[in-house]
Every structure is written in structure tokens, then in C-alpha cells.
Image 1 (cartoon, helix red, strand yellow):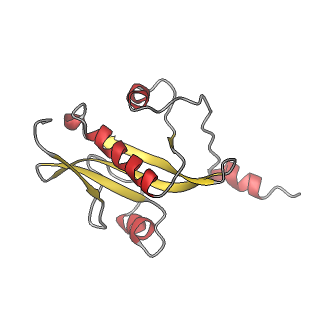
Image 2: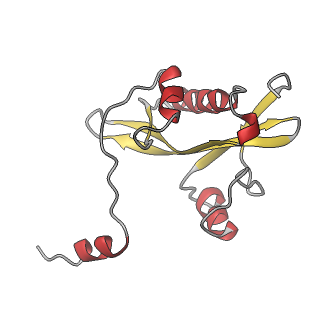
Length: 148
């Protein structure tokens, strides 16, 4: 599969994530990513006209540095296309976007002990050893109701 030309392109409203079913509706993804104020961007990797991977990302802000940055939300390559350069090509495309837009860096979160960490390190990312914390559901509601 690696011998076929790989193409990276911007996702369109008609794309879907190859190999995965979203936990939300297509309408919600269309509104959030392709509406008048998109909350994320996505790139698609294609080989022989077939989607083999995607990366979604959004702009964040590095407060201590006073500069925008990119945050990768998801990187996925279908199992049969892994280790063919698709993930590297997708991350390289995000890196080009970051440089074009004067973003100071690109970050992502990955669970501890995941094999993907080795891939991210191989492309030059380094592990900050920060815990990725999440507040959601009932805990989010409880905290929001806390008075001053």
C-alpha cells in the first residue's frame, strides 16, 4: 500500500472519518466543523482515491507565550494503512498549517503507555509528562453550581 501515492487534502462537509463511527450526528459535525464559525479543521489522507486517515485540529492559545498554537484533537489511520507514512504525512500537513499561521507549536494529548507515543516522539514531539484532566457530566454541573 505504501507504493501508491498518498494525497493530503482538506476535509469537506461530505467526508466522514474513515474507519470510525462518530459518537455524534453528522449534522452536529457539519455545523461545528463546516459552518460559519468552524470549531475545528480536518485533513484527509487518501491513497488511490480512498480515505485512509484523517487528522482534526483546532487553534488554541499559549497564554504564557502570548501566541496561538495548534491542538490536534484526533489522528487516525485505518489499520491496513498503518506504517505506510500516512500518519506522518498528516502531521506534517498540520505542521505546515502551524508555520503558515505563525502558531508557536502543535500539541496533542495521548494516554500514558500508548504505542502511539513512540510515533509522536519519532516526528519530534516530546512528552511533557502532564496529566490530561477532564471535567464533564455530573461533576461539571456540580462545580458550576458552586457558589463563590
